[in-house]
Image 1 (cartoon, one colour):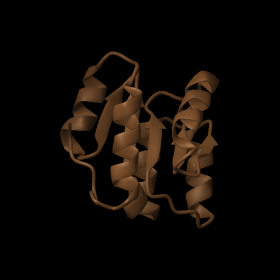
Image 2 (cartoon, helix red, strand yellow):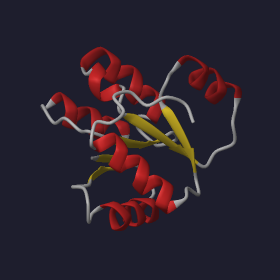
Image 3 (cartoon, one colour):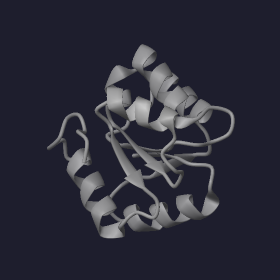
Image 4 (cartoon, helix red, strand yellow):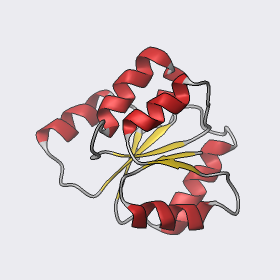
Length: 126
């Protein structure tokens, strides 16, 4: 699974939470994630922060729709930010999940397990 987040604490906590069951590859922004996918990497699950420098989660999603739509469908967005009109408009038009920080560790672990095993092809809204 791919973790896209610029906050070291979040990366460390999610890596600890999931690494016993999943290989966790992490990058700090959308541009790095896009480069990995464009180089041929594919992921069962992508956990992606909404707000990051360089390229945010929304921009990553839009770029992946063009280059690797199967990966774009596997993004689960993470945010601790308040819902702005931009955020609401984005989630009104996409089917991807949004998990608010702080997330429940057991729920995150169960969600990633479900998505990684292919029991849910494209995430639907919570």
